[in-house]
Figure: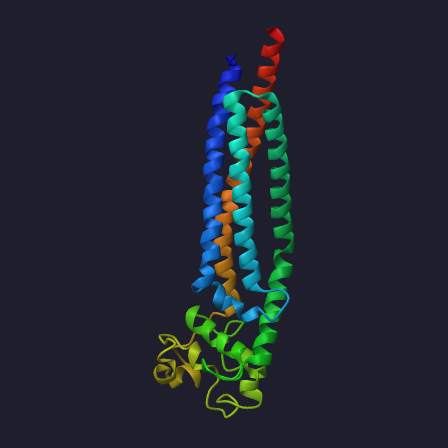
Length: 275
């Protein structure tokens, strides 16, 4: 026998909420898949420059995508469970559903809190690792040097419209401590202050010919001032905002879903007592 009155309203709301819950779960899963697929495009390959270190931006981005996919799948499954319980008015399924949602909500809150607590520490660690990799490996402003990490740095400068790790403000910059400046290369020979790949308006096929001396020698105009740490941080934040926004919406819906699941459970329980 179907519930009536307040119980019927609770049932309708729980069905609607779980439909929305399901759609948000699918959306989060798709967002994670899109981010994961970008490994074959221009995002994660450029970030693989840090693959030699323990904490890598490539790994962070990959973990964000996998987490989004996992939460999306879990949310979709739990919402399907809730829909079945609401439609069939099965008390044991409803209470199990409420417990699942509470556990899922607690995990999401813990993950968000941990992310905020670790954010500054991760930022500083990644920045230090990037600077170390630049200072130890940057040997030439070309894409076919003997050092693959140096080549990846140049790809990063070209593809992400950035230069060095910290912002470039003048002739004293992050390249001063690199082999390119201290042992050999155009910087060591005082023929350049920054790589040609840091010049505005160049690409992988023409940077050697098109880069202007006002950029890479004199730094008077036409050079990229934004550091690659800030640029990559912006990229991660752009993806994270989408994931966090959807996650917050899901958490709000989860709280409402728990309330209506309990309401429907109580109404079914009371109605069975009357019968």
